[in-house]
Amino acid sequence: MPVKVLIMEKNELRLRIIGESHTALQMLRERLNGHKNVEYANYFPGHPDLDDPEFYIRVTGRSSPEKILKELISAVGKDLSSISL
Image 1 (spheres, rainbow, N blue to C red):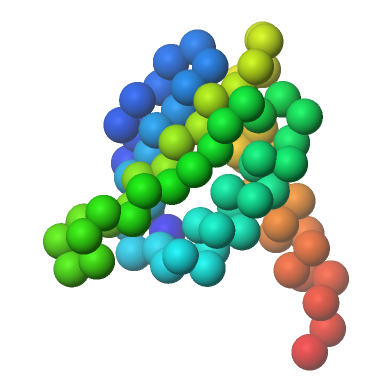
Image 2 (cartoon, one colour):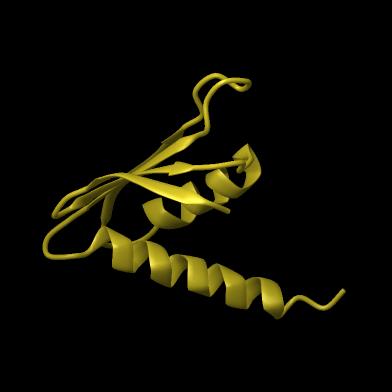
């Protein structure tokens, strides 16, 4: 999944996520909003034929949005690898 960083500031991160579906973005949004240091997380799908979705994260205090996102993605990967099919 290619990702383009649009805005990276002290407590905000905005990404363009290329080729991703609502399913993955919804799951990511729900998990981020459940994190104690995330003030707000959401994605904006844009036009389905013209735009790649954008994802926005705002964190509280001295937290790093990049670090929280990386930790969450790593945890999701571990959860998926524990599933036996």
